[in-house]
Length: 499
Ligand code: NAD
Image (cartoon, rainbow, N blue to C red):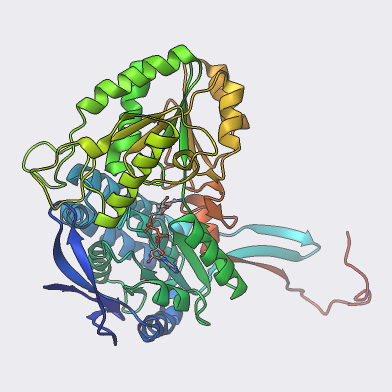
């Protein structure tokens, strides 16, 4: 059985635990590897390595650090398909989607390559007579990243390229369901010339996480995962005096206005709701048609398209399927259970449980489902299902659609499809959600902007990557300096200096 080890101080290591977790192939249901489950001792070893590497790395010039990232970016390009295959085989998303994930991660590395410019401080001459003031953005220290199963390459890459480029060292605790991408990233960073100990990977679960986020030598914690765990991480790590950004779950709505191109909106919804089997934090899980006529047309267009949704293995010869299996048998069963709840609470229009997967009897498959007439108070509407299930919540006006979305506990992403500039602008201004699309179904910001939701989709003030990412991984220091030619009188030292 292939073993997936930790990566500490530049070397793969089994650490000090005999416990192993199973890594499955979701298409076949077969176990394909086992991953070491980290202990507090393994976390201690990784943090110690990161701490030891910190003076050297933070003292390396930003330009030299960026040059290593340039090499790393080239290596990622070379190994993009290898990484995408690993992701597809462990996560279950289709190969082309996995390639897209790696590319979006590489874009953050490209952004981080510009860090010598991005990390510059400000300078003011003569803030007082003969007094200058300047600021610097210094690394915060050892940073920790805890990441979810659904983007095993891209989500870690939201974090560590910026942390490393700004002079920090890093310990990553990836999800244990699809851990191989993390090790490939560690190997390529080493190959690019990153000194040992600057980037470490500890596999594991809650025990490793809870030790890492409260460790005395860790300064900052970035987390991405479900809302209950994000809240736990935010509260626990903040109480332990770390700076924290904890991104949580989502329930993303897409409003379809009566003037929208219904076929275009339905096409967009298919990819946004069912792509990656709905296991995306930016997946659209609620379609919000405005007006009954819009709702009927949209529903018919979605039903027609669902009949042709290609669901099958994540790795195939030839053209990819639209959607692969879910990540695990438990998760597939959880999603199937929600579909059953939807049938009781609302109107189940298309039942993904009925799709025939006899060609892959042990894979974790389920077809796409559509549930109409959902509303707040129903479990299928209120809870994050994180699977290929699209709800339709009908409204009568843009105001009602905005109120519906603003009342939701989650506020990660949302979108509106309309031909009206006024409706689009009103929506963008009034909606209380972190990322907004206008005729764009999944409005994921580019690496040089910042990604993050509001409300219970993000705990903490700073989003990931872009300018917020640079702020998160740096501490501001402001120096006020006077270099007098002669001795200066300090006569008024007891009063506030004014001009
Ligand atoms: P999860 O919360 O179960 O796990 C995330 C990480 O937390 C993993 O590394 C896991 O090992 C660790 N963890 C799990 N339970 C823990 C505990 N009790 N104590 C400490 N650590 C624990 O999430 P998941 O199932 O891997 O990922 C899916 C979730 O992530 C969805 O809710 C999705 O919306 C969310 N997500 C959000 C974003 C975003 O940007 N907001 C992006 C991707 C995924």
